[in-house]
Length: 193
Image 1 (spheres, rainbow, N blue to C red):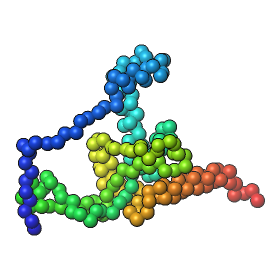
Image 2: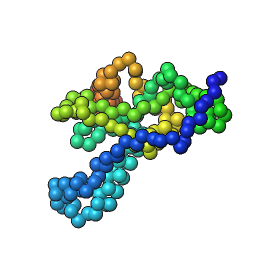
Image 3: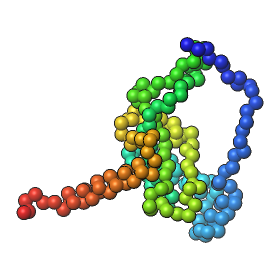
Image 4: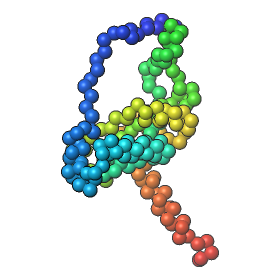
């Protein structure tokens, strides 16, 4: 066992400048583009956006294949990945015991949950799509972690050796086959020859 060097909590930190999209310019342009909502207060618009995002996060967690984002921006899903090769240190326990303690993810059989965003499907072909990215907020990450530890077998297994766009095509094909089969079963009559 190797000793754990406690972090200096009083050391200076680098804090990147934070830019919020929901600023005065955004609200003014939104009200100009959609004049029927100009009577809404900025707090109400912010609350509507936040409630929609929370609903979207819940759907991503509850749905195995993920959710397609509005306006065909992309696809968001949770994938099961193998644990990384490097050691995953549990800093709270290491600080408590003074020895480096690694986190082994025993409740998920050593697997990790990752939030994936992809826009490489044919229906997401838009200009400059390679510049789009997704960064999950802390609350969403924590909810994914909690749900994943309870039901980790439900989520799609992502192969680290294959490209994500190939995996997404496979998932989309599987989803279309399931929908097609369900429609054919509705019309099926076992007594009609």
